[in-house]
Image 1 (tube, rainbow, N blue to C red):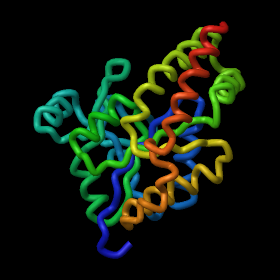
Image 2: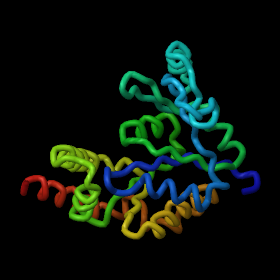
Image 3: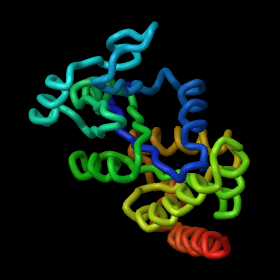
Image 4: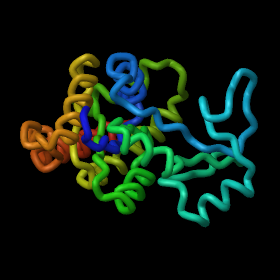
Length: 221
């Protein structure tokens, strides 16, 4: 890695597209090249959790002060507790030459991009709308109502994909994991032109077709 600064990348994607699986496999395979982003939270530590390992555990007062001081890259409130990504920790990892990946939703991703324009935004999708529906249904863990909500959310998200930089089609997991790693490495090494085929601007027809097919599936139910 030499003296090169690391890349801050955000991975978002449709529910059911497998972004979490990609992230897990990426860290297992290439973990030494990445600085794991540790979130700050106001929730109490669970048994076995350590401050600075699973989370930075802070009080609500401390968290609100972090927001006020602009010390968080992004944050959200889930079920009464705050969660956020501390800016200093991420900057330290990047300065060491480590790449840092955040797996967050579209709204948060665009906020980070606005604050830090060099952030690379990657969007993960299935090869088509039918496969996305099959994956959501195949989980067997969600009701029809929840699946419908996730499909509706996918339609909304498909309108925002054009704000991202690269598209990752997760058809074969190994290929998707390697592509995410190669994209981030290519950006760090300033060889992005090698990945022009994966740029959002090169995949507008695919994105439009995905949105259309998602809408057709929802209309047919």
